[in-house]
Image 1 (cartoon, helix red, strand yellow):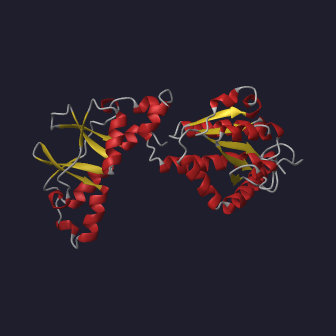
Image 2 (tube, one colour):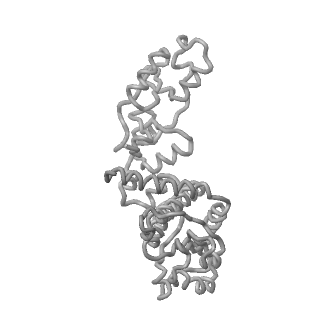
Image 3 (cartoon, one colour):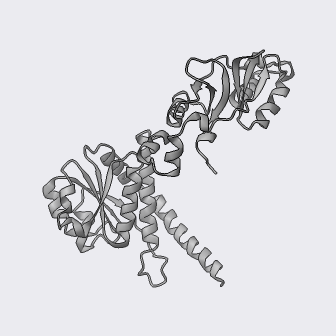
Length: 317
């Protein structure tokens, strides 16, 4: 077996374990989501060692996506870091075995503080699971480590469960890209979202006239790669045609060759000033469930000088 074949076998083993974990997810997950979502304080992840590293990552991901969260090392907690935790917090204790002594040592003081305890563990019958209010199982049958000793599949399972929690909570909080820019201004996306429309829009505007035939409209939309075209009457923009307008026209019309742009264009379209922040442009797109905006020189102007698309703002490649 080559090294690459061995690597593929390792992937297959982990994927098989993760599939079993996926199939075991039940109402316990829902209860954990509800507990975190309705928490009046913050989510505190606690762990130690390699599992603690995963817990730290989960806390960081939560904090950057709208769920107030911190990580506290369990060993440091009993030496003063418990002061970061209040009775309004939800504490998630992460331990695959559920019997790590440093984790068990914090349960009693956390009970005195009065916060809710969630165990994320691979052992639902462990001391940790028995002493927690809620249990989120990350049980796997076998580590991919040939000795069964090094945390491998178990840490992957814990990370994936944390990702699942994060994404569900993101959607529950209606967290959008413009919110991400607020919490993550130093990252590439954050810096981009804090820019202005003028720096990302295209001035290569798709244009057709009101009397342009249906079959001549499609090439203009395709060539400009925006999935839309502005409709003009002379020099004045009077409407917009999007991919959705085209699909609806095909469904509703027997003879599309008789159609002209004016017959199926949307007469109203959203404008935005070139000086607007990209976060505000994204918010407008989200509010009206659209992916492009016509750009004007300023808020008073009606002349279209460009188009800003969601793909100009967020580089998906």
